[in-house]
Amino acid sequence: MQTMPVAVLKSGLTVGNFSSPHAFTFEDETVLAGCEAERCKALSLREEETEAPFLGGASKFGALAVTPKFVLTEEIRQALIKASYEADIVLVSFPTLAALKEAKELDNFLSVCTIRADRLTKKVSTTKFCR
Image 1 (tube, rainbow, N blue to C red):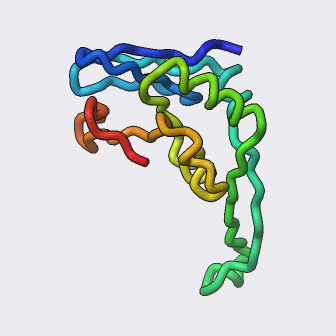
Image 2 (cartoon, rainbow, N blue to C red):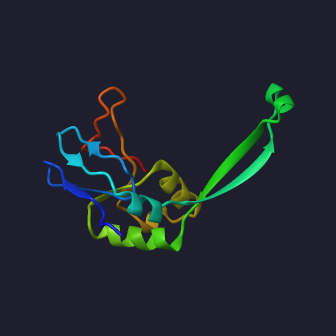
């Protein structure tokens, strides 16, 4: 599996892209590369869904309300431990952050965050990260 892409911001802070195929451009113009497909797939959350009839008018069309639940795998946990030694900040997807919170494991991974980006420029903050 590909190693985690890491970039050093102009401030000296190192940031890693845990599993996103997307590159990120920061406010200081530093670019953090996207991950290769193999890494993205290997570090995908396990998805569990529950289905229920849709409430309201859509039910007459057979629409179902699907509630996804994302579950951490042991491979993700081990990769997060490794990643915490490779970067000061490890950027994960919002579902990964939510799964860590649900499993009450977020405090085990202090460097794990999601991005905070400007909605118009799409540039990622160099000083603010979401937990």
